[in-house]
Image (cartoon, rainbow, N blue to C red; front, side, top):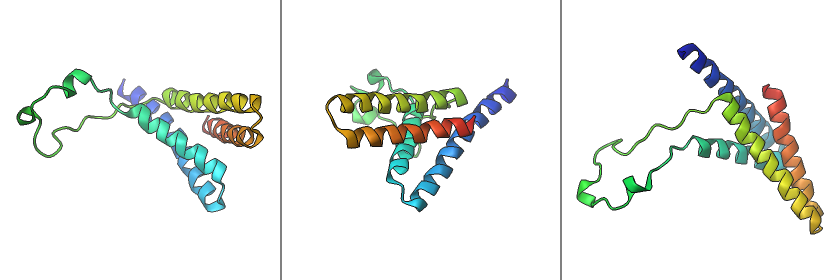
Amino acid sequence: ASCNASYISAMAEDVRLVLRERLTAAMKERDPVAVSALRMAIAAIDNAEAPSVDPAQVSGIAIERSPRGIWATEVERRTLSGGDVREVIAVEINERLSAAKSFARIGHAAHVKQLRAEAAVLESVLAEAS
């Protein structure tokens, strides 16, 4: 089972590696569309790894009962599989394409072009990482 978990983790890291390499190249090339798409995808993955917070645990605690000390409030982040990471990127692609359709209906050609270009960048990341 641990071998399978490390394989899944490696798949997720492959996608992240492609994202980071592409981001570095896009920054060097001064490609604002690619930089924007790649940064948002990386942020979306980071957000998906955030642990869920139970509101009942956070509200109503008296300050004298709050955790104290170094790392007292640290929580382990969720671990995403390669499929989970791909799903996050697919959601980002779909959001851009949906927004592009909305902007096309109201005649904002520049926004449509940028959103479709961002979606294409993310689609190429998925293709490269597979």
